[in-house]
Length: 193
Picture 1 (spheres, rainbow, N blue to C red):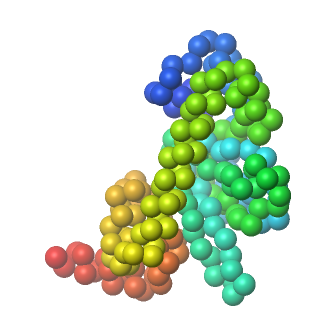
Picture 2: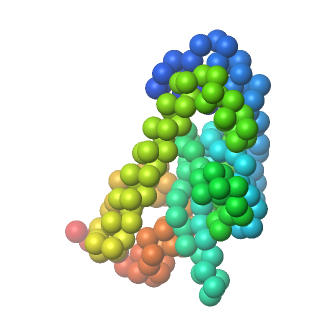
Picture 3: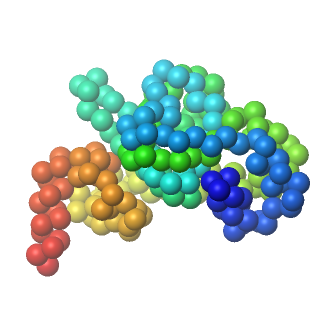
């Protein structure tokens, strides 16, 4: 039961009342996503938050040379959305795509507003999630300007230990801002220690 997994996710922070669970079940949608299927494409306005029940999503941009730049991954029990597009209601500059077959539960923006107004627990939970994501992105930016590629890779392994064997080298290298060949060299050097 994918929606039950979402309820369990919220229960670990602040246990939901029966009425809150009922509303959550009614106001969310389950979606099966095929590998390489988009949840959001550049130019579309983002209208939802996505909770990953199974699988893995990535958020990325593509530069003018056609190079993909991975910004974030979300696997089981993690959230992904384009906050900028969601709140500004402007077209997204990002893509969200399934890296592997995935099952998500989606909350539309209007339903999220309903939860925030009527059930303060959700407002608190989403605020904390957003704050944590902001801190994570701030730390990642700092790593990118002050850490070596090897240090960034070790930090990636610490943050995403469950994904290091699930993602292709090209995806990890894109996230780290290096070539797949350089990532292979880093892995070889670390294995030789």
